[in-house]
Length: 171
Image 1 (cartoon, rainbow, N blue to C red):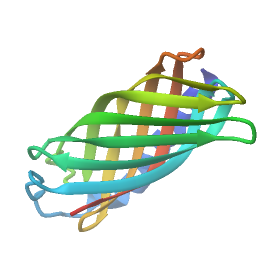
Image 2: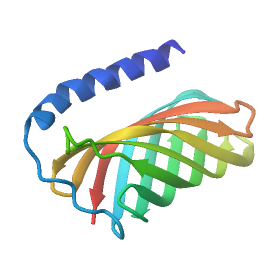
Image 3: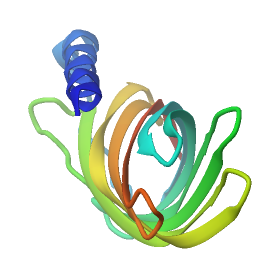
Image 4: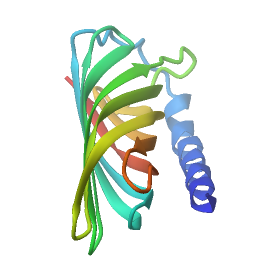
């Protein structure tokens, strides 16, 4: 639990420090995202997995049904020397626009799919990631992001946390 508090504190400090320069700039109103795609990748820790804390990677794609609402796959891959896990889910994401800070886009998301874990023997069960994050626009259609997910599974350790830092491109 202490690790999670430290990670959340660090994320907040990074967003405040990095966000100040982005928030200070004037930006044009956000274009309507409906009908557009977004693709991204990230890396970061996966905490409290069956093997403890491991390195994680995420790959995502979104299709925007409306300006705020998108759907798409999320692939989470975690590994260390003796353990690996792969989770694939269909995510529903709601992205907010902040009028005072048009380059900052917080979001909430949830999904459902499956996870497969291997540490000598293979286990497969359901995976339900719930959480959110923030995207900060650094160039037109390019975003840096941070995502924090609470992952509920049917595996022995039925709960783990993923915290990813990465980028997203909207097309």
